[in-house]
Length: 273
Ligand SMILES: [Zn+2]
Image (tube, rainbow, N blue to C red):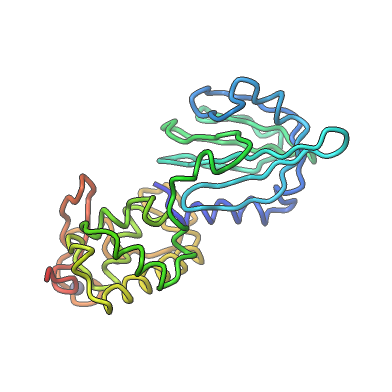
C-alpha cells in the first residue's frame, strides 16, 4: 500500500514530467468506474472539470491534492483530492496510449497528453470538491512537517501501543505499516510499548527515526514491496523480513500481529521494557 514516500514520488513524477501536469488544460473526462469518483460534483464530474487547468499539486499524508482553476469569464477554483489506497496509480501518458483493463478515470488534456487513474483493486478514490478540508480535515499534521516539539506534545495526549498510534492518521498523517515498522526499528522501540511509557529520549529518537526513514524513502522513490512500486529503491530492514537476520545484530526478525496488522521487529534491538 502506498505510504507518504510513494505518494510523494507520484506527486514529483507528475509535477516534474516534461511537460509537467501543472499548466495542462482538461479537455474531457471519462469515468470508467463510478465507484472511484466522489465528492460534491460526482454526478456532473465531466461538465465541471472540462475547461479547467491543473494548477499546483500538494500532498498531505497519503492524499494528493490537485488545485484546478478556470480563468476568463467565469473564474473558479476546485480541488481533485486523490487517495491511492491499495493499488491506485496516476500516470501522465500520451493520449494515443490505450486505456487498460484497470483504468478507472481518464482525463484528456491538451498537448496530446492524458492523465490516467489505474486501480486494479478499486479501493482508490478521487474526490472533486470546493475545499480539500472536506476530505482531509480529520488528518493530523503531515508526518514530514511535524517538529520534535509538536511530536512530543501530541504523543503526550495518548496512552496507546505505539505501533497502532503511528498508523492512526489523525495522530500524524502519512505513515503506514512499512514505515511504522522501519521507524520503530531504527529508534530501538518495541512496537507494543505504551506511548505513555516512552522516555523523553525515546520520543526524541522516534521522532528522528520517522524523519530519517521517510526522507530517505522519499529520496529513493519509495519502497518496492510486492512489486507494487517497482521504481522504489528504499531498502527495508525489518518489514516483510520475518526469520531473516537483523541488519544490526543478526538475530532473526520476528513477526507478530498488532491491531490486526503484521508487525516486524528485532527482539534484541527493540526489547520490550
Ligand atoms: Zn537486531
